[in-house]
Structures are given as C-alpha cells and as structure tokens.
Length: 377
Image (cartoon, rainbow, N blue to C red; front, side, top):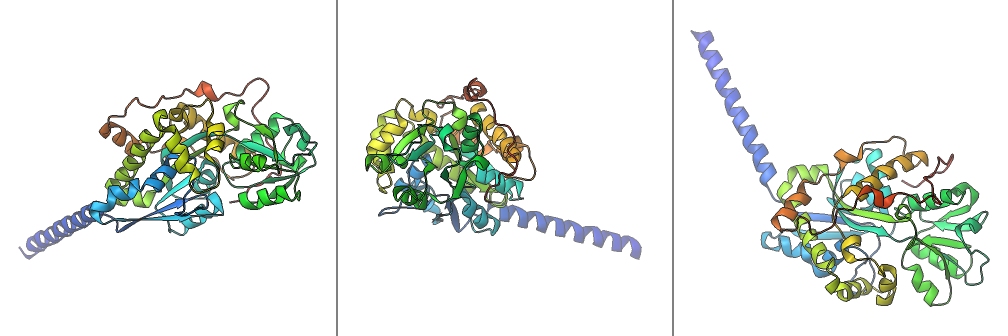
C-alpha cells in the first residue's frame, strides 16, 4: 500500500512539475522584449543620423519600426558600425544585437563561423558596383588593374562580386596590390592619389562630380553576378523567444518596402536617402536609372536571390573566405515574411525573379578558385 501511495505521489509531483515547466515556457515565449536592438553595417551620417540605399534605411528615416512597437512601450535601438559587416558579426557573437542589416558575405562568414542567425527578408538587391580611379589615371578597364594599388573593403558584400569581376578578366586579388580600407578612408586615399583605384558603391559618383575621380567601371549594364545583395537577419535566440515581435518587425519593414517600391514615390525615396549627405538626389537617380524600385527593393528571397546566396557560399569557400560550406535553404526563414505578405495582402506584389536572370554571360564565366585569397571576418 505504501509503495502504491509513493508511486501516486511521485507521478503527481512529476505532473505538477511538467505543468509548471510548460507554463513557464509558454510565458517566456509569449513575453515581449523590453528593447529591440538593430545593427546596421554602415555608419550613420547627417542630422538626424541616417543612411541610404535600402528599405530598412527608409524604415529608419520614417520611424516605421518604432511606430509598430510604440503601443507596447518596446524601445527600438539602432547601432551603426563603421567597420561594416565584420563589426556587426562581432556584436552578434557578443549577443549585443537582435536584428542586423548586412550584406551576403559577412553574414555567410558569420554563419560559417557558428553564429546562430536566420535570414528573414531582403532589403536591397542588385546594388551596383563601381570602380573609381584618379581623372588622369591610365586605368581604363578592370584588366588594367594588374599590379596597381587597389582599395577593397574586405569582409563586406563587395568582396565577392569584386573577386568574380576580377576572375572574369583573368585576374585575382593576388594580381593586385590590394589595400584593405573602409569606405571613407579609401575615398580620401584616392583623392590624394595614395592608391590607384577603389572599388565601391554609388558614393563614388560624388567624387567624380567633384572632379577628383573617374568611373572606370560600373556593373549597371553588366551581369547581375557582379552586383551586391543585402538583407535583414535575426538571431535564432530572439526569433525563438519572441516570434510575435519578430513577425511584427518584419511586417513593419515590408510595409515600408511596399511604399518604397512604388515608383510614384521615387523622388521622395531618393530625397530620404540623400538626407544624410553621403550622396545627392541626382546620384541616386543615376544609380537607379532604368531600374524599377520594385526590383531593387523587393523583400523576397526569390529564386534569383536564393541562387545568389548559394553561389556566394560556394565562392566564399573557393576564395578561402570561409572554412566550411553550408546549406543556404534552411538558413533562409520565409515564415515571417510570408505571414506579413499575407496579412498585408501583398502576395504577388513583387515579381519573383527566376534563377536565369543571374547567369553569367559568355564573356563572364564563373570564377575559378583563387589560392591564397583571404578575407576579413
């Protein structure tokens, strides 16, 4: 009898403990965060501080994410990193961020190194690559870079398309005298002719207009394999603990992307991007000339973008920027994006670009492995 009673008591205690544990877990899952920390892989400029070139930049400028969480008194904190993607990875590894705006390569480097993240939506695709040189430089094309001092911001999402571009012209980083410089330092070095060339983005147009640089190459009319891609990611820990907050965050950015993707708002989008002072409206007009906002600012991880990230993992491994490859498909979590698209009735608004839109032309073959090339992580 005593043995039977002990069994009943033991089972009861286990049941009570199980119920308490489940209640605790459910409570933790349902709890809202007190603050949401967002990292941005670029420095902020201007007053008020801001940045440009993506839907998340518009969300920051308009306070769209803050408005989403204001009724719940949830703070949104923004952190900007001069060190770009590599610095964001360091903050993620120290558990100092919940979301991050990054390019493909730094996120791939972080994932391959063990950072537990998931990609939740795209924020800017097909960002053009530029090569700038001094106005009187003899450099006229990518092929002329052999032996020249060239600034590349390593570890950022520019490095892979640069490596692909060099390979397409029979070169590698080892054929150049590569200098690893951040954006501002590289532009200053080009102005003083301490370097022969710099790879960068739209902001190099500003140097051209000042008469201190000439654009020797742009990917605008070239293969899309030479463009840059970016996204928002969330840590696995935050997404698992706060799925509702993650969904609302993504929804706020998707709403912003919908407004930003409307070409009726084209000039206002460029005005907001130009407000920090890193580029003028006419520079954004030039960079986006002939390209619909709906293509460049799509939040979709469509076949085009998914294939770009698969290629990025493969090429990062070939170029020895990561030590191991991984499967991209499980890394991309479309559940929050799909929920937002359904709730906002935006399913089908953005075109899903097929894989074939990114294939190299016959003049631009896929890059071969480059021994000895290394990146910053």
